[in-house]
Length: 374
Image 1 (cartoon, one colour):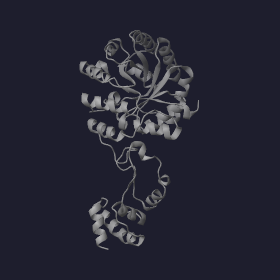
Image 2 (cartoon, helix red, strand yellow):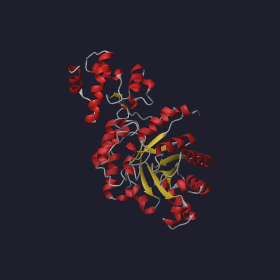
Image 3 (cartoon, one colour):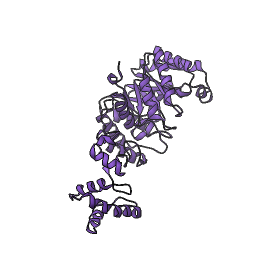
Image 4 (cartoon, helix red, strand yellow):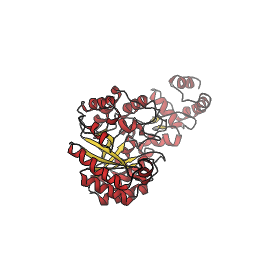
């Protein structure tokens, strides 16, 4: 299968891992709106909560399930009998049963052994399957797990009836080359679907997610704006654009209405979006430097790495200290005023002085005043 003929299933976990960000709580209305918008964009899977958290969480999961959105819904659970019972009767078809894969976690968090992990997987996965659930086995801290033991986890999960294994870089310590090798090795020992769950502690969550896709992962976890614990998760918008633009891999997700969802999640989470945040930051499609503006006006591809239309946005040409005559002429043209290159050259010093003093681009009134002073 060629890369361009492959597809990747996005399993967005904004409503689970995104809400696990310190201090973040979504209201039910916010959850319903976020889920509806994600589904409308074509996101095929949504991880929507943790049933064991309590009755209110389960009621909210039921409410999201009651929307009857297209696609698959998942809930997250520890791989424990008492947690599993809370995942039933919610209207959700798939559960991620999570258990530690690394010796660090097995010995120092669970206070158990590798054999106990394998026995627990066998028992709990069979119980979930018998209850009518599809099961993804979440290998927590897989990035620090012994690779041979991870293969044993995959074998135990598959034999017990799981259909997917989640490779979790729980503490965000991996880099793309290591991810590629780890997923390639896992792919060689299991027929199950493989899902990548990346954290951004080193700023590599998106890169690691793309590497996993190249190595044979079938599913990837994302969150809107890269929301998530600590430094966050792989950003939905970055992964979707990266898969398509870099590798020709389709996710089926249409981001043209993403800006409104991005801002809603930022507001609901109390988070802020940096002005230079890739794809969604306020200024990432803004251009000031004269050589860039001139080239962009001649042909957008001269200085366009990503088409802003993919996200329902457009290029913004900003007048500032580094502007050139072409940018000035264009700015006045947008106001319906035609000026020549000589006039633009005379206006440039005024514009540069203005932005140096005011620390902002001149607005319509300012431009009109400059023209009157010529």
